[in-house]
Length: 178
Image 1 (cartoon, rainbow, N blue to C red):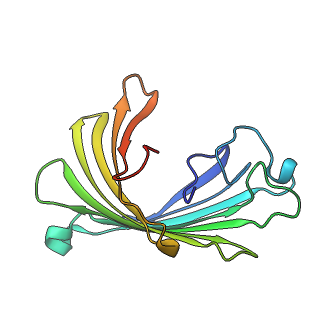
Image 2 (image 1 turned 60 degrees about the vertical axis):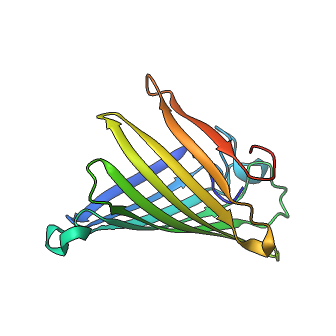
């Protein structure tokens, strides 16, 4: 998969200024296996970093827009000791739409697999509707643009009551549901 889903580790966050926040961290693996060390041991942690810029009120209609860039670098939990590490680079923006509680987002992901010719790139667009204080309804469309592997995918992501996470319903035209 081009995107890691979650990590077990330590994340440090710091608000440098009203418009700038940064994060840095370490995690057990690149993928979402809980309490499993990378490369079948715990000596190769995954590193994470990101920065977010928030547009100030003085930018008019862009007020509150957020530009985020991040990187995740590490090994999968199931990787052999000779496997290449993976680096995911993410750049995304969230823009206000002028409609209360509705935002528009765009994202670009690049997955670099060292010692490999199978790098991947994906583009995404999404709409997010804040339904109440603690939940939102999200629609995300992704396109994998690497090596003509792209099949548009539409996903409806909704929160599960009780902070249990999210439920995703996805449809891939002309293909199986992921």
